[in-house]
Image (spheres, rainbow over the protein chains, first blue to last red):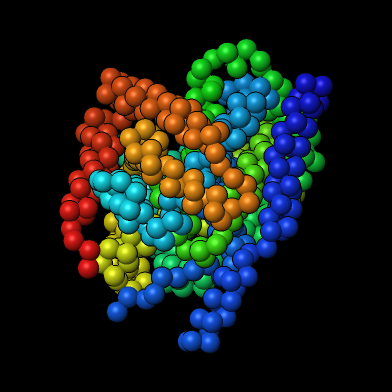
Length: 47
Length: 492
């Protein structure tokens, strides 16, 4: 592959796949709110 | 008695379903071609900017609209501004129309999984596709001649879609996506690896990634980048509004949206690599340049790829199975999301139970779709309706939804940003406001004006005016009339 093609390929892969990994890591550090989970448990008991 | 409103099992269930909706046929057959035609590697700059300045902001807007109201588009937009329900029904109608022809294209992809075993298209894939398989009518007008081998597969597609939808949000939509998305990832990754091992693959990657910097000075390239990002993310026609309405009250909207946006774009880059590696092989085998063999859309999937598969020798069956199965799996999850919009809307409006809504809306759509698309007109109708409904139906609906809140009722935009910021980790502010008010609005307005002007002046392609009038403009008029009528009806 020529140099400019390799550079563009690397930039787009790093930006998009890197963005995907970072956004997954970000969300995993912020778990779902506990009160929503509790609401679910409450619903199951009610049913 | 209506069921109480359903929820996703978890945030990850929503994310995987939203990715399943966004990742569709367009990721595989549209993006690589659009990128190549608009500057190759240089296109990636406007594409990445479009993702950040239009795709993600619009995705957040759709999520906020649906989540804030816990309703389908008519209910959600009615809660935001006067006349909003008509806009919501317009988006619902757009989804119904898309569902009709999307089932047809899925039928072709599913049938080609079977045809790829032994390469049943023989030495003339183009003749096989148009004449032997679709039996395309030569008549200029409408010709409702039945094609029996298109009938049963499209019945099967509708049956599968309706079975998933009968299952509901958790056990239907979410569960199917939890099966289809990992399957698509495995199939498509193997396909890309196989493509990269072919002789000539590097030639293809060079063609795809080598930047043509002068293209960046062309405003049409920028419009293409923004237009593609917009279509690719399934924003602006009610799907993301509906999916977000099933989220629990305290869901991190922007955090989830980032994953959906980046996952969708990551799949497109992967598709570009796989498709162009295969096209490189095709050019290598034919002793020509990649520019001589490149194509997109239906031509890429059902003509170019069969040619590539036939040239592979021993690995042909496997390669064909991987490619057409990937198309099929990517498409079925999008098909489910498209139909979910009208089903949710009727549940909200008429307080129908899920089974009743699926039977009447899904069953009615299936009937119309099966009659229209198991005929010799299938490809013509797909092409015409797709062009009009994408470029006027989706763009028009999205434009009105954005300018209604960004230009005319700024307090609604403030309410939406407050809603996002109350529950999300990544906050939206002036940047989000600016992208919606200025960038996205003006780009969509420009695109819509250019398309409508061009369609009125030149028509679409070489199709007869009667076909364009009935099925192209007719689809648009249908959406407008039904939207107005339904918005006048009282809720039950």
